[in-house]
Structures are given as C-alpha cells and as structure tokens.
Length: 150
Image (tube, rainbow, N blue to C red; front, top):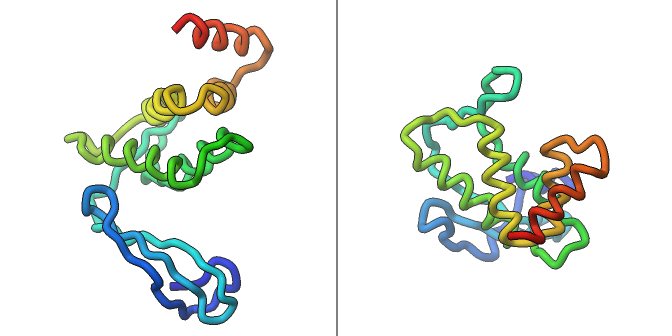
C-alpha cells in the first residue's frame, strides 16, 4: 500500500478490525519510510453504483466526494472524522441495499442533508448553502427559520 505522505510502497499493519457490519476491514498502517500512520479499508468488490448527475451523465459512485463535502461543512465543528465516516457509511449502505443500482446526485445530496440536520445544524446549513446554491441571504434566513420551527 502506497503511503499517502511520502509515496513509499511498504507499510506495516498496526491494527485491523471489521467495520460496516463485517462488510469491510479497517486497517491502521504505518509507513516504513516516514513513520506516519494512515488508514485503509478493504471492501468486497461489488456491482458498481452509478450516480445520475444533473446534466444526465452517469458517473461511478465515489464515497470520497461525499466525505470531502461533509468534511468541509463540519470544519471547525466538534465532529470527528470517525463520525463523518460513519455518516457516509450509512448513506453508502442504504444506497447499495437498493435494488436499483442508479441513484440521482440530488437524492444523495438530500440524504447527506437529512443526516447533517440530525448531527449538527451549523454543518447542515453550510452543506445546504453549497448544495442548494444559495445566491442571497434570504435563502439562509429561510433555512434558519425552518430549523427553528422544527
């Protein structure tokens, strides 16, 4: 496994454990060159999940895109990486349990917003502002009123 820090090809596994109800193995690794630690996941190779983009293009599902978006929304909030990974795991698990192997990007965005709303209202508003492409303050005010009333 290539080290994400120095690109060295050799590392040692310091910890392995089952995650996602036994559907994956999480491995903590330490680079034998630079000594930095990183996490890898080993998952079963499954039928690809396809995402239907706004313009109709099909794209293979990429969980890292969701992690990146959620991580940005949770910046400077008391939300650890493990919580974010669990949130994305639950979305991916729900999507893969569907009989249809195509899902719209809109549905994925809605799923992220539902979970962020339960997790952290500030992260929810941040994500929603980008996802829904807010152009002015009135959209922020509207979403804040909806949060206050629920």
